[in-house]
Length: 252
Image (tube, rainbow, N blue to C red):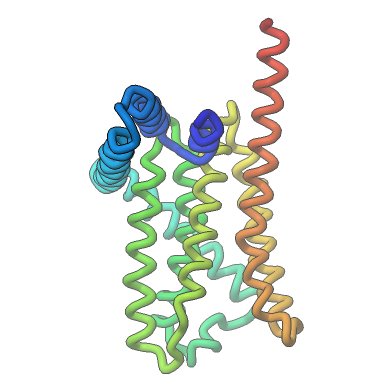
């Protein structure tokens, strides 16, 4: 149970949610220990599982409401607009007209490109936040936007796509969200934020350059994109936990 709570603290952007889950797990353990017999333990497990389900639903609902009602969505739109302009300029400079693969359709290009820019926008919104952001709410809002864009792309494009790119996109979004939460915890987040974005942009450009040269290995190239935030997240987590451990040793 301690290991589960430790990983929840590593992965979650909400300390309140982690404390609530931790308290629920402690109550669950206490009820199971005090339950009379196997049937009593089973009923305790069932009640606590239902309670944790309601807790998770409550956390998701409140995070989405905070993302929409407390100005976080406006910050996300601002970062997305800036990134669309910047990344669009880079795409034109490196690859020429980025709409060529979409039969010259600006709408199809936007439906594919804007949700990608929103991944970095979520990261910047969280990493540069001065107070704890509703990270889960932001992820769900952006995922809903991506789902709408994906459905529209499927209807308008002559080339229908499978769900695997959407799943990969959501994995990348989740990893950049975790990285943003980890960077936000640093005293000065500006430098690690710029380094992370630069590495992410560089990897995206590298994948685009290697794509026509990869041949039969093209299917593996997109998996470099989630590897980048995952590696950065592990690096920052290791550095921060090492610093906290050294601080505790000095304090003792």
